[in-house]
Length: 479
Ligand SMILES: [Cu+2]
Image 1 (cartoon, helix red, strand yellow):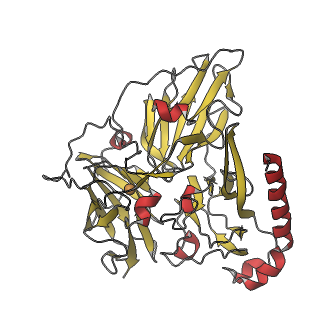
Image 2: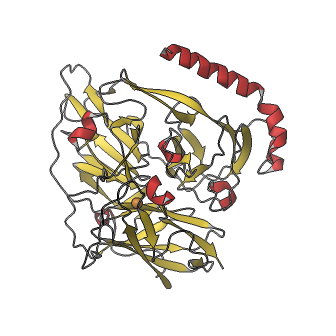
Image 3: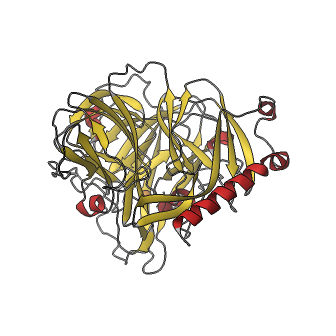
């Protein structure tokens, strides 16, 4: 079948689903029946098959939102309630998670927290109050297990920008760039970029390492920024003297990434959408899966450049985009940035504005290698999910969470519905950096503080889908 025929079919499927929309509405329990009286939703997300043409030789057939992957950038106003209709045109139940938002568990979009699913060929209306302000994102939170065509392996991801009404607007262009890998496959070797430049002491390296053969991990050989691989699609066109604001998202289900723009420095102004106390101007940035970084770039070095992954094979397999100055015509140039360890603490300040933590939660992360053909298992404090009543929070209490990573790879850990303040990374203290996802370095330690102010179940997990699916998660409850 030719591609245009596939596209035609896709269009037909959409039209049919549209016709079926109202009968299905009656069969599905809406989240907030009162919202139905308001009629049309503020946003509609339709989950359906989509073809993504990364370049001429890579046309990906996946599931996406509203016919594209990434889905549309949803702009919302902080504190202004919105209704979102999610229509599921696929055969499997789906969950839409609002990553970084402080919303109740029934809206958060995970089965673990008891959020209702969006039924196959059904729909559901959600009413949520967006916040806090900043770069958030939405994505599928379905379990994938050994099915690499489900959950966050699909094209179900997109930005939400929550506008706090205080954007100073000191930039000429605002870009939303999502880093992505495609066509995942099973492999016995780790593909992940664990930021090998890190030079911290390995505080959690066990005295004797488990040398059992590694089990299956997930890798990828095809990459893009948004929906295009490097060299295909339009370049980012700039003029000398402009300021670019780029909101990066690592929407990978698999890998952490380092990104650079040769000839330019990136001023990091926000991590996970939250302004940092001490912006820093750097040659490259590092994003764990699920993380966001906002940077400002002064366009002061005319030429044609590649903005992309610092790993040659990954960049040349698509993870990049051309940045072209007006009037410049030459092959795009790449220069390796100087090596530098990624260190969150440089964006912090000396003392926290928050009260001192009252209780400590200690966590040890371990990997049980399962050898050839089986999946590794991942343990938190010696146990896989769900930990029953191990992590019970008292409303109003400030907690210190100590994450000890006794595994040989870096894990982007995410706690739903709460904000973390970084306290210490590999023994280095910091304060004032607010995040929802933190990469815990391999054999390293990350300490974060948070206030238990969001009653209900909250999922804690590694943002690498396969790790999460095979045990690397825990439920926090409120007493
Ligand atoms: Cu992990």
